[in-house]
Length: 520
Image 1: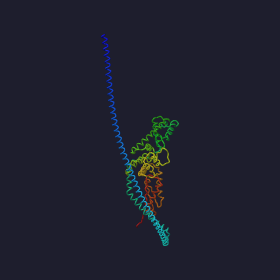
Image 2: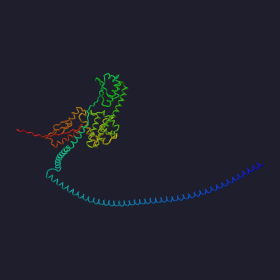
Image 3: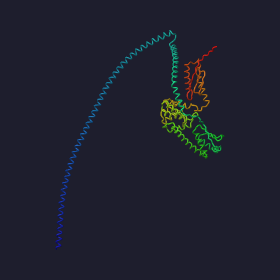
């Protein structure tokens, strides 16, 4: 019973506790809902307030932006109005100026027409006076013809002849004085420059020829070079283009060819073959090909070394190769590379003496004969061919003109052009520079003397100083002093136009009058 009571009391206690708990929970939830509603209404109120503030700010910003744009637009309108006003003012000024110019032009035109009419009237008057003067002149001429017994043409011819003779005499005297005066100063300076230039450049003798001698240790090697039935020597001649002469000359083989490059290739190839000992057609072709490549490289190296020695920069590789090829080319027995180096040095010194561009003069001096080493045959003179190559490889106009004009093929346009011509003549005309055939040398002396004998009054003529001077002795009865000066000039012009010669030829005309009496 007690247990039942206790259980009932416990159940009742639990039920009361649960109800109290539920009541408390319900009151808490209602409080939370009320607090949440209050908080939501507060947030909503704050949000509305903030939105209102933002709206007011945006309206203010929009108004400010509008006012700003309005002011900018007004400024732009004012600026455009100002520009339009300025343009209108300029237009009004131009219109005023044009109207003034038109007025001036109209005034000038009116003045011109008035002056034209005046001049026309004066011309008519002059024409009338001219006709009157002609009539008077004709009447006076007729009177003079009657008085003198000569016609007007005859009198005119006599007067012209007398005036011509007098004018010629005075002109020759004036020319002679001018020449003498120029010689006192210019000739001395020119001689000084040329002599100093020549003295400062070393020279070499001409030793080039068309054959090379290949020395061998013994005659046994000749048979190996010839080969069985001449196979080796034929292969060597075919590969090199050189004629190989094997004769009875002891311990020597002669290589003959006009092309020094091919001759050098053949000589070096023979040296390699003899040194190696293996001589047969296949080996010959291989050695010749390698030697040709070696010579090609040597040509380029020689060209580079030459331009470095002369201080020339920026030369095209093809021109450097052409300069190297000059080593194996000769002209009148003079090595072309040595000649070109000599001309370049002469040009540099002479340009320095005259205050011109030294580097440009050296460049033109080195390249002046590049037309003498063409890869293929050409009908053009070597000066014009060299000029074309220089233009092709980007050389300056001064250099191209100097190359083309150094034999008077074209007109000289620059100051360095005559320097190149003079230095080329100096290098070719110096003693020992070129080998000349004796017959051609004697013929040139005879031609000089014959040209002098072709003039009236020449008694004797002598070519002296290796053809550098011509002494002409004239008859004093037939040639006067004035005619002697004219004769010297005429002979020089004829020699210059009809003959080819190195350097220059001095013509000296000698006129002598002797009066001999014997006192007994």
